[in-house]
Length: 509
Image (cartoon, rainbow, N blue to C red; front, top):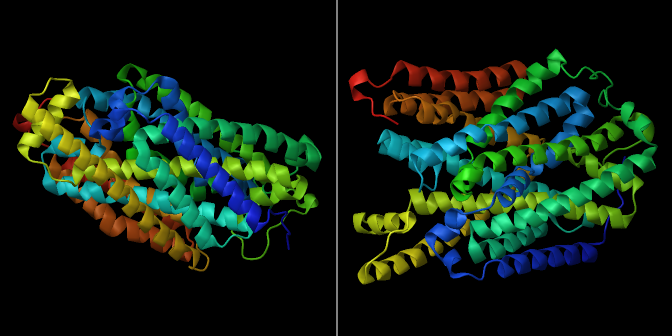
């Protein structure tokens, strides 16, 4: 049974307090300007985010709990093919936005959310509402996963109770997100990405050196069983690769966090931001996978304490070879990645709530459109605009608090389900996201897409495909899991293609 080198609870509370104050201070310093108290400023950062800030924000927001923990877990359990099938689809998922982001900005230059575009494109309240479920659900699960992983990490390393750790994380991220919305996320993402890179650059090579060098990694490339040295192992490709590829690509396309950035980054910088963001992301799980390969080398004797989820195997590896100071640096790196996605989830939820749930009169919508387009307002309109901004920012903060509270409850519940781990949370919300991925792409590129096909395709995928996927995970049958994933993609595609608009009804998109 493994014994971990850990910080004391007092050291853990101090670490969280210092980290939280640092992030709040950075946000406040960069958020003193009035525009971040407007709807446009709070939700899309004025639509003038620079490419390098956009790239680091994209990368660090995608470096969330699965990238940190599941990547190491699969390197440990399934060797080279495990980390390949985790990392490659992750990179592709971000690269797809090289095409999608400029396309949606072309069609809706002053948009805020993908469901808003779907409502505009298909002119259907029913489809808009059915789209909101996976988009809100995805952010709920994103918040829950970060709290679940972060609470487990802090509790494991410091002895701080799981609930306390999650509460502290939630409070910290709410405070700095309340200050300036998306701008707070983008600014802290930049700092957090630097901390992630520094942590990886110091901790990973140091651990490898202390464990005996690159030869010790080579001994674990086949995973803990030693049977997975072929990077294209067909068994791993079928049981893990297909589901992961579908889930990751669908997850990115169905994630408001990246559509929000597509509307916030300067239009001419979108391709550069997403291209660099994808490459910058890919470096992190590949580097961290070496910790999983070390753990898979049975001669090193790395193991976890009883009851600790296997996704924490990277922590056990670092703990075994490095001193307490290095472990603290590693913890800061991991927390930075979790916080970057946690605040992105809060901001994505706020944009969905203000744009797609809150009600505005036709007059108010007209004024907001004028502001977005940079047109001047009359004195009366200016007064209404100020009220709208105040109302929108209040609504944003209300949505952030609500999703944080719900995410906390989901994470707490997941912690008490026997045999339920981070991998299961990750797979379930990616599968929900897969229900809308095909209609989303078709909405941007196919003029004959009709609301009827989208509605029935997505509904069928929800009602039949998702329960089949969950059942497959309960009975742990790869055939059921893969079959359910493929069914979701197939049925949503089939309905869209089988119920197109008539030629005479097609509107140029």
